[in-house]
Image (cartoon, rainbow, N blue to C red; front, side):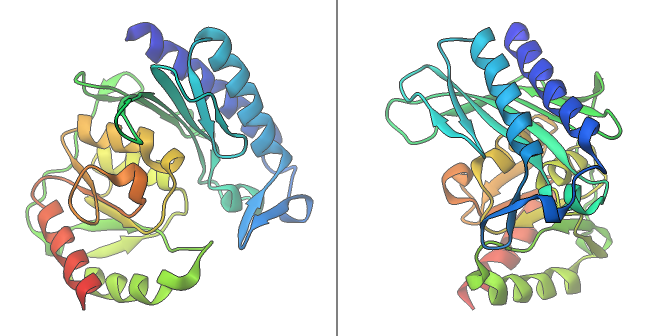
Length: 268
Protein backbone atom coordinates (compact mmCIF):
# COMPACT_ATOMS: atom_id res chain seq x y z
CA UNK A 1 0.00 0.00 0.00
CA UNK A 2 2.88 2.37 0.73
CA UNK A 3 4.20 1.90 -2.79
CA UNK A 4 0.77 2.57 -4.30
CA UNK A 5 0.37 5.70 -2.17
CA UNK A 6 3.77 6.93 -3.32
CA UNK A 7 2.73 6.45 -6.95
CA UNK A 8 -0.49 8.40 -6.37
CA UNK A 9 1.39 11.23 -4.64
CA UNK A 10 3.92 11.51 -7.46
CA UNK A 11 1.19 11.57 -10.11
CA UNK A 12 -0.75 14.23 -8.22
CA UNK A 13 2.32 16.41 -7.88
CA UNK A 14 3.05 15.96 -11.58
CA UNK A 15 -0.41 17.28 -12.46
CA UNK A 16 -0.01 20.15 -10.01
CA UNK A 17 3.29 21.22 -11.54
CA UNK A 18 1.61 21.60 -14.92
CA UNK A 19 -1.21 23.69 -13.42
CA UNK A 20 1.24 25.96 -11.63
CA UNK A 21 3.30 26.43 -14.78
CA UNK A 22 0.31 27.77 -16.71
CA UNK A 23 -1.70 29.53 -13.97
CA UNK A 24 -2.47 33.11 -14.96
CA UNK A 25 -1.39 32.50 -18.56
CA UNK A 26 -4.59 30.95 -19.90
CA UNK A 27 -8.04 32.53 -19.71
CA UNK A 28 -11.63 31.59 -20.44
CA UNK A 29 -11.34 32.93 -23.99
CA UNK A 30 -8.69 30.27 -24.68
CA UNK A 31 -10.79 27.40 -23.31
CA UNK A 32 -13.71 25.38 -24.67
CA UNK A 33 -17.17 24.55 -23.39
CA UNK A 34 -17.53 20.77 -23.37
CA UNK A 35 -21.02 20.82 -21.80
CA UNK A 36 -23.35 23.56 -20.64
CA UNK A 37 -21.41 25.91 -18.34
CA UNK A 38 -18.48 23.48 -18.07
CA UNK A 39 -15.08 24.59 -19.28
CA UNK A 40 -12.11 22.54 -20.40
CA UNK A 41 -8.69 23.83 -21.41
CA UNK A 42 -5.46 22.47 -22.82
CA UNK A 43 -4.11 22.59 -19.26
CA UNK A 44 -6.76 20.09 -18.06
CA UNK A 45 -5.79 17.78 -20.90
CA UNK A 46 -2.03 18.15 -20.38
CA UNK A 47 -2.35 17.48 -16.67
CA UNK A 48 -4.45 14.37 -17.16
CA UNK A 49 -2.31 13.02 -20.02
CA UNK A 50 0.84 13.30 -17.92
CA UNK A 51 -0.81 11.74 -14.88
CA UNK A 52 -2.31 8.90 -16.89
CA UNK A 53 0.98 8.09 -18.61
CA UNK A 54 2.80 8.01 -15.28
CA UNK A 55 0.19 5.96 -13.42
CA UNK A 56 -0.15 3.33 -16.12
CA UNK A 57 3.62 3.06 -16.45
CA UNK A 58 4.01 2.54 -12.71
CA UNK A 59 1.08 0.12 -12.45
CA UNK A 60 0.59 -1.26 -15.99
CA UNK A 61 -2.09 -3.75 -14.98
CA UNK A 62 -4.41 -1.01 -13.68
CA UNK A 63 -7.42 0.68 -15.31
CA UNK A 64 -7.89 4.43 -15.50
CA UNK A 65 -10.85 6.80 -15.24
CA UNK A 66 -10.21 10.49 -15.83
CA UNK A 67 -12.46 13.49 -16.23
CA UNK A 68 -11.11 14.40 -19.66
CA UNK A 69 -10.05 11.10 -21.24
CA UNK A 70 -12.67 8.82 -19.72
CA UNK A 71 -12.21 5.13 -19.09
CA UNK A 72 -9.24 3.00 -20.12
CA UNK A 73 -9.60 -0.70 -19.38
CA UNK A 74 -12.35 -2.45 -17.42
CA UNK A 75 -11.07 -5.74 -16.06
CA UNK A 76 -8.24 -4.93 -13.66
CA UNK A 77 -8.11 -5.33 -9.90
CA UNK A 78 -7.27 -1.63 -9.59
CA UNK A 79 -8.57 1.56 -11.20
CA UNK A 80 -7.15 5.06 -10.89
CA UNK A 81 -9.78 7.82 -10.63
CA UNK A 82 -8.31 11.20 -11.54
CA UNK A 83 -9.41 14.81 -11.67
CA UNK A 84 -6.50 16.68 -13.26
CA UNK A 85 -7.98 20.10 -12.46
CA UNK A 86 -10.86 20.43 -10.04
CA UNK A 87 -12.07 24.01 -10.21
CA UNK A 88 -11.41 24.76 -13.88
CA UNK A 89 -13.56 27.90 -13.87
CA UNK A 90 -11.66 29.23 -10.85
CA UNK A 91 -8.39 28.44 -12.59
CA UNK A 92 -9.34 30.22 -15.81
CA UNK A 93 -10.63 33.26 -13.90
CA UNK A 94 -7.45 33.50 -11.85
CA UNK A 95 -9.28 32.66 -8.62
CA UNK A 96 -6.74 30.76 -6.47
CA UNK A 97 -8.86 27.78 -5.47
CA UNK A 98 -8.32 24.60 -7.48
CA UNK A 99 -6.91 21.13 -6.93
CA UNK A 100 -5.60 17.89 -8.39
CA UNK A 101 -7.17 14.67 -7.13
CA UNK A 102 -6.08 11.03 -7.47
CA UNK A 103 -7.82 7.99 -6.01
CA UNK A 104 -7.13 4.28 -6.32
CA UNK A 105 -10.10 1.95 -6.31
CA UNK A 106 -9.97 -1.79 -5.69
CA UNK A 107 -12.56 -2.90 -8.21
CA UNK A 108 -15.47 -5.23 -7.57
CA UNK A 109 -16.65 -7.93 -9.95
CA UNK A 110 -20.19 -7.73 -8.59
CA UNK A 111 -20.79 -3.97 -8.39
CA UNK A 112 -20.29 -0.85 -10.49
CA UNK A 113 -17.92 0.62 -7.91
CA UNK A 114 -15.46 -1.09 -5.64
CA UNK A 115 -13.62 0.24 -2.58
CA UNK A 116 -11.45 3.34 -2.66
CA UNK A 117 -8.24 2.44 -0.86
CA UNK A 118 -6.03 5.48 -1.54
CA UNK A 119 -6.85 9.18 -1.86
CA UNK A 120 -4.48 12.04 -2.64
CA UNK A 121 -5.38 15.70 -3.19
CA UNK A 122 -3.11 18.69 -3.52
CA UNK A 123 -3.61 22.44 -3.57
CA UNK A 124 -1.06 23.34 -6.25
CA UNK A 125 -0.62 26.97 -5.19
CA UNK A 126 0.11 26.24 -1.52
CA UNK A 127 1.70 22.84 -2.00
CA UNK A 128 -0.52 21.36 0.72
CA UNK A 129 -0.84 17.61 0.20
CA UNK A 130 -3.68 15.55 1.69
CA UNK A 131 -3.38 11.77 1.73
CA UNK A 132 -5.33 8.81 3.03
CA UNK A 133 -4.89 5.07 2.91
CA UNK A 134 -7.76 2.77 3.83
CA UNK A 135 -7.54 1.93 7.53
CA UNK A 136 -4.45 4.09 8.12
CA UNK A 137 -5.82 7.59 8.72
CA UNK A 138 -5.62 10.90 6.88
CA UNK A 139 -2.71 13.31 6.71
CA UNK A 140 -1.89 16.84 5.62
CA UNK A 141 1.76 17.30 4.71
CA UNK A 142 2.58 14.19 6.73
CA UNK A 143 0.73 15.28 9.89
CA UNK A 144 -2.38 13.40 11.05
CA UNK A 145 -5.65 15.32 10.63
CA UNK A 146 -9.09 14.88 12.17
CA UNK A 147 -12.51 16.33 11.44
CA UNK A 148 -13.83 19.00 13.78
CA UNK A 149 -15.78 18.02 16.89
CA UNK A 150 -18.52 20.66 17.10
CA UNK A 151 -21.81 19.36 18.42
CA UNK A 152 -23.89 22.53 18.15
CA UNK A 153 -25.14 22.81 14.57
CA UNK A 154 -25.90 26.50 15.01
CA UNK A 155 -22.17 27.12 15.45
CA UNK A 156 -21.06 25.18 12.37
CA UNK A 157 -19.48 26.51 9.18
CA UNK A 158 -20.60 24.52 6.15
CA UNK A 159 -19.45 24.41 2.54
CA UNK A 160 -21.38 23.61 -0.61
CA UNK A 161 -21.49 24.04 -4.36
CA UNK A 162 -24.28 24.71 -6.83
CA UNK A 163 -25.16 22.65 -9.92
CA UNK A 164 -23.81 24.27 -13.06
CA UNK A 165 -24.08 21.66 -15.83
CA UNK A 166 -27.72 20.80 -15.17
CA UNK A 167 -29.98 23.48 -13.71
CA UNK A 168 -32.91 21.13 -13.05
CA UNK A 169 -31.86 20.85 -9.42
CA UNK A 170 -31.40 24.58 -8.90
CA UNK A 171 -34.74 25.08 -7.13
CA UNK A 172 -34.19 22.20 -4.73
CA UNK A 173 -30.60 23.33 -4.27
CA UNK A 174 -31.65 26.82 -3.21
CA UNK A 175 -34.34 25.49 -0.86
CA UNK A 176 -31.76 23.25 0.76
CA UNK A 177 -29.32 26.15 0.99
CA UNK A 178 -31.93 28.24 2.78
CA UNK A 179 -32.68 25.46 5.26
CA UNK A 180 -29.00 24.86 5.98
CA UNK A 181 -28.32 28.58 6.28
CA UNK A 182 -31.09 29.04 8.83
CA UNK A 183 -29.72 26.19 10.94
CA UNK A 184 -25.94 26.74 10.85
CA UNK A 185 -23.61 29.67 11.52
CA UNK A 186 -22.48 30.36 7.93
CA UNK A 187 -21.81 28.78 4.53
CA UNK A 188 -18.88 29.00 2.12
CA UNK A 189 -18.83 28.23 -1.61
CA UNK A 190 -15.17 28.14 -2.82
CA UNK A 191 -15.84 26.29 -6.09
CA UNK A 192 -13.48 23.29 -5.89
CA UNK A 193 -15.15 20.29 -4.23
CA UNK A 194 -11.92 18.36 -3.72
CA UNK A 195 -10.50 21.15 -1.56
CA UNK A 196 -13.81 21.54 0.29
CA UNK A 197 -13.57 17.89 1.29
CA UNK A 198 -9.98 18.28 2.47
CA UNK A 199 -10.88 21.35 4.51
CA UNK A 200 -13.71 19.37 6.09
CA UNK A 201 -11.29 16.55 6.91
CA UNK A 202 -8.99 18.92 8.80
CA UNK A 203 -11.79 20.80 10.60
CA UNK A 204 -11.81 24.05 8.63
CA UNK A 205 -15.40 23.24 7.65
CA UNK A 206 -17.81 21.25 9.79
CA UNK A 207 -19.96 19.92 6.96
CA UNK A 208 -20.34 19.77 3.19
CA UNK A 209 -23.11 18.85 0.77
CA UNK A 210 -23.56 19.11 -2.99
CA UNK A 211 -25.69 17.82 -5.86
CA UNK A 212 -24.50 15.94 -8.94
CA UNK A 213 -20.78 15.57 -8.38
CA UNK A 214 -18.75 13.14 -10.48
CA UNK A 215 -16.71 10.19 -9.15
CA UNK A 216 -13.41 11.99 -9.83
CA UNK A 217 -14.65 14.94 -7.73
CA UNK A 218 -15.26 12.88 -4.60
CA UNK A 219 -13.42 9.52 -4.69
CA UNK A 220 -10.21 10.74 -3.02
CA UNK A 221 -11.88 13.34 -0.80
CA UNK A 222 -14.49 10.92 0.48
CA UNK A 223 -11.80 8.56 1.73
CA UNK A 224 -9.81 11.42 3.26
CA UNK A 225 -12.88 12.51 5.23
CA UNK A 226 -13.71 8.99 6.44
CA UNK A 227 -10.13 8.27 7.46
CA UNK A 228 -10.14 11.59 9.35
CA UNK A 229 -13.04 10.34 11.47
CA UNK A 230 -15.87 11.90 9.47
CA UNK A 231 -18.96 10.46 7.78
CA UNK A 232 -19.40 10.73 4.02
CA UNK A 233 -22.54 9.39 2.33
CA UNK A 234 -25.05 9.91 -0.43
CA UNK A 235 -28.18 11.97 0.24
CA UNK A 236 -29.85 8.65 1.12
CA UNK A 237 -27.33 8.09 3.90
CA UNK A 238 -25.64 5.09 2.26
CA UNK A 239 -22.18 4.51 0.79
CA UNK A 240 -23.30 4.60 -2.87
CA UNK A 241 -22.12 8.16 -3.37
CA UNK A 242 -19.82 7.37 -6.30
CA UNK A 243 -22.76 6.24 -8.40
CA UNK A 244 -25.26 8.82 -7.14
CA UNK A 245 -23.13 11.97 -6.95
CA UNK A 246 -25.34 13.71 -4.35
CA UNK A 247 -23.14 13.80 -1.26
CA UNK A 248 -23.07 14.96 2.34
CA UNK A 249 -20.11 14.83 4.70
CA UNK A 250 -19.58 16.01 8.26
CA UNK A 251 -18.26 15.05 11.65
CA UNK A 252 -20.30 12.30 13.36
CA UNK A 253 -22.21 14.82 15.52
CA UNK A 254 -23.34 17.02 12.62
CA UNK A 255 -23.91 14.53 9.80
CA UNK A 256 -27.30 13.27 11.10
CA UNK A 257 -28.63 16.84 11.33
CA UNK A 258 -27.45 17.71 7.82
CA UNK A 259 -28.91 14.49 6.44
CA UNK A 260 -32.23 15.20 8.17
CA UNK A 261 -32.45 18.63 6.49
CA UNK A 262 -31.55 17.12 3.12
CA UNK A 263 -34.17 14.37 3.37
CA UNK A 264 -36.88 16.75 4.59
CA UNK A 265 -36.13 19.29 1.86
CA UNK A 266 -36.04 16.63 -0.85
CA UNK A 267 -39.36 15.13 0.27
CA UNK A 268 -40.97 18.55 0.62
